[in-house]
Image (cartoon, rainbow, N blue to C red; front, side):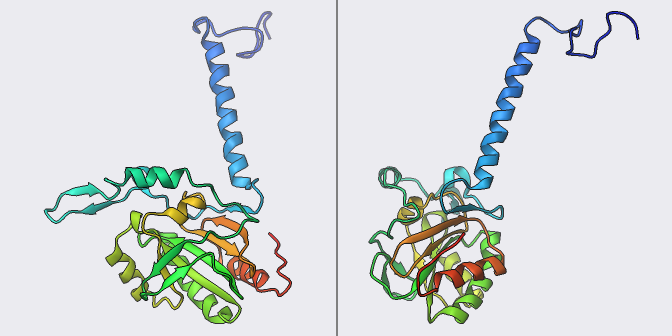
Length: 240
């Protein structure tokens, strides 16, 4: 090995490298490490009783879907509701350990459902969209588990019409023969209070109306049933 030779970056710079290039590279590398750290923390789910999974669908264009207008043109479904959306954004986010808010939602069955009413059964809420592939895969599982545990646990499938179309929601519900109530969160007021980040989003609520866990992403059948079994325990204990 000849005198004065060193691997690139160890004691000797690349002769073609301009002054300052190495500093820029170090800054870029540090930023890369910071981004990876943030991603790692999010995937770990450090927030208390907040669970992140990877099978999700995220509404595009800042979570505003596009629908076809009568004249064949495309338009943003969210136009003209800026004031309402601003109001939704400033609402306090619901965290595990807090009660469900007293928000009344209409169901496809024509009934009204008060989310904050006192109940004698635990509740599983699933926020979904008709165009969400993980939601379509998971819906039959929810249907089956609802039939199995409906005497102890309620299931509400909540569609956010702001990111969907009512006719698609009705078609989705009919095609899968959903047995549990399908509710309409028209402007996403309730969805936003649980983060409003992706579909599906699940909320586990105990018999006392307290939010136990918020789960972002699709769950396997085994994991979903485990969550439901824990919810129906008489003593209200819940593990994650």
